[in-house]
Length: 151
Image 1 (cartoon, rainbow, N blue to C red):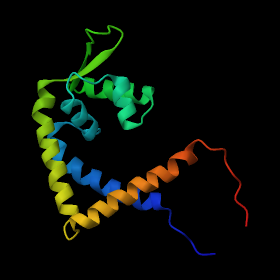
Image 2 (cartoon, rainbow, N blue to C red):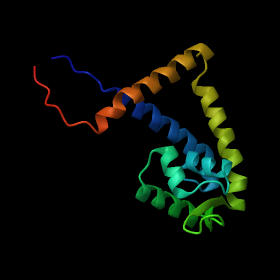
Image 3 (cartoon, one colour):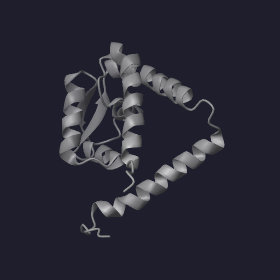
């Protein structure tokens, strides 16, 4: 039997390497995790609820609460009551986040540029298209009944 490496291992490996470089370049900002989530909140400052952010990121509500709590404890984010619907809380960024996020985004741009050297724009479009197709293909399998695979 030939051993097959799962595609997920390849994606996890590149993800770990990327996050390691990101953490090294942003260590001085006190953002140890959730750089992209903080950037999303920054870009939608005061326009997103926790639920809306959870939907964008395809995360469950309890995980989103934990993430927001951590970003709040670190002084990057706070919740503000929605004046239109007082049951909702809008996510806002602090001055600390307003200083950190532009540096985080610049770091994303720098790393993205470095890791795509020698890869044409056309190849990147194909790569992104393939990733999207793979996501589309696997999504239904997360809710389908488990089928026993036999030879």
